[in-house]
Image 1 (cartoon, helix red, strand yellow):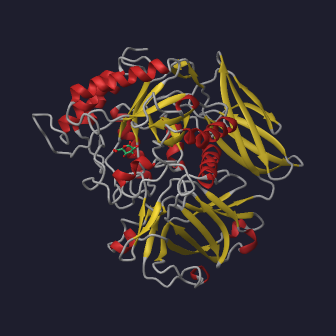
Image 2 (tube, rainbow, N blue to C red; image 1 turned 180 degrees about the horizontal axis):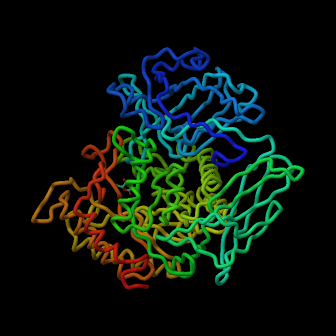
Image 3 (tube, rainbow, N blue to C red; image 1 turned 30 degrees about the horizontal axis):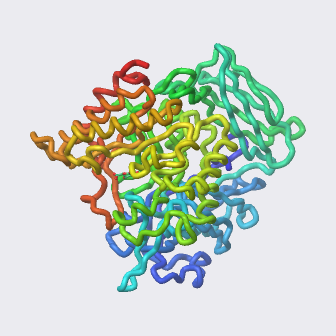
Length: 599
Ligand code: GCB
């Protein structure tokens, strides 16, 4: 499903703003057909935003189940004669869309867009009632998984085996848009180069049979190559490559033609670059690339996971300031605005599904009974089918982003048992089938070391989350360093021709806490912890990247022992630097995408 855009043949209306909002505390919204009439409520909720931190009522914040958003929408007169669609950039975690009370779309998976053709239900120039019901429930079959527990007092609580807070609602934009009856439905772009000649392969799908014309346009607006036909390859003389830190974007204008007339026009940004794993190196444009940056979160005060362009630009400014060349979309796909911005600004992305918390070994720490990770009550065939769907949707949505260099299938799942291979192998296979141009990884947890993990052989790159000096060897950096080094030695000797990225290492730190004794939680300890870890990485040529956990402090779930959230940020939640940010800046701003050894 293409992202809506405004072109010569397509119109676009943004539906963000204040929507009427009602929480379905008693589970009666569907029976009473709330979507068919004006919502009986005084509450209004902003879109895009998670609703949890907006209101002062704790019952709303803790609600488990459905909420209803509603507004009136007038279809622009210019949409007459076109196909009219509504698009929800995300509904966390399940959304049902109603037009004048009639269901038109339904989608499970909280971080992915979905849309519906509502042409038969609305009229250009007239208003209609748009209702979106959103459910925040996670079950053992959703991605990510969770479990609803009913307490002795009858109150439901959502539990889950990941630490970030389960923000819910309409956290991304909602759109009404028109497309012509004959339209471009999908575009897939692949790129390469041979000397100074760029190659842009393309494949276009149209709604009905139509002729296709493609034109590649450079940043000065000049046509540099064109072709006809639904698929082919364009040659670009004197190509300007998309490089980390120095992005260059061409635009591929795709036209669907009927009888020689343009029926539809759609454009895709194209960065010409290659990605390859060669031995234990990760190459971008045939050059070894060293990842510096963070695991991040979509997380801000008040808005929760709500997308906001001011926060977006500011976060990328801080990435640049600190010398980060990359980040991971931990632990779910981020808003498409983020992906576009990374394309435009040359930031490299490890793009992750929302498969986090498939690990019952966390049950003790996070609460809840300890069950097997894979089984009828937990990760079962339906969970696996939903994981495959998550991989499919992620690659479909993000396949054309030059910033994306690596797909991540899952974060910190249990991987040391044979069931894990049965569960995850189809996801690796599917990712490779859908996108043969990018390597595939998974994120390994500390409790599944090299002698135990059975999923590592499936990966092109092995990503490790390690907390030596925090969860292990807490406050003892000498021992932490020894153990970290021994562990990396073990991994790199077992997998000598695989690159490794340390995708998490971090220490909780209270901004403003100091200690001349280097005590944990102080800014000094966080800096020393990072310096210790970095000096270990520098000993291993096979370690091709370091992503600190986390970019910024973030909100966590109730019931896990954290002081008002996870404090491992290099920046505070309001984006002020801790001492660690300066430490990282001193190291990263001189690296120029290479290891400190320069290789
Ligand atoms: C991890 C998880 C991450 C947590 C982090 C922590 O291993 O991947 O989601 O926030 O540890 O701080 O404990």
